[in-house]
Image (cartoon, rainbow, N blue to C red; front, side, top):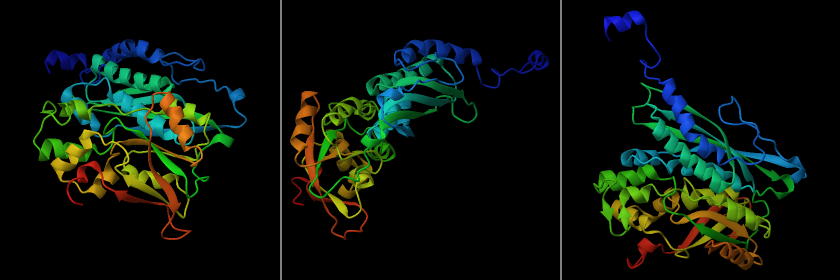
Length: 366
């Protein structure tokens, strides 16, 4: 710093925070944000709080359902590829799919973005992904925050998280309490890893196998980076449509913890989910991961979604109808198992048991 600059006094920009760049980022993202607005949104961009007029006349007893989440270390892949326009979809998906599990329609979303150095075009790209996720989920992006934090994050680093609020009629809330032995589990496929297990996936691909994001793998038909950056699927629209016609008893969003940890969260005590491995197609990325990392099958099933993004539990009498309704909407669905009485007794905590073989086990004589 020159003597003249010292005499003039320090500015916020010299400390690493550029308010002008922040204002430009807001201008760049305005169109994307407004494209998500629903009729209930009462405020424009730039206010201190987002206003949303809930139409209580649609519900006998409206219950607000909320969820919050981030993207995790998948962000590192976006940074390595210098591609930031899809990561926001993941942020919305992790929240909207979670509240969908209880039968809630997502209404509005808020995001929080923390950056080391605010580059308006980069911030606008990230928020464009958030807006796209909101459009897919049918919710409005009514607020957000971008924080420039020099000295806390490296210049190229950032983190993004979000918060989603939805609504359901109390009598239509889904909590799994109606699930009984004999009910059928239906699986809607994932698009890949979604946003979970990336610490292990990055270790396998980058550290163990020595690949980079630009490494093309014939087994995947794309580069490692392209595969790892595939956005998380958002299941809101087909599932909400299904709930209008079928009495779904329970649902599970398959995130961190995989099938093993997430399905028991919606099962009553004294029951277990009996899953037939091999009853659904497994995307190549999981087979490649298992082989390159020599990962045990049990570890795969409790770390990754292994090709299943969302689970529906329905009565056996309505299973075919549910499959057909989803198929009419262009949605593939697989029967992957049934609910059974727990082998550990009527008071036992819910569990998952597996039979059969996964794709990576076939031909190994296991």
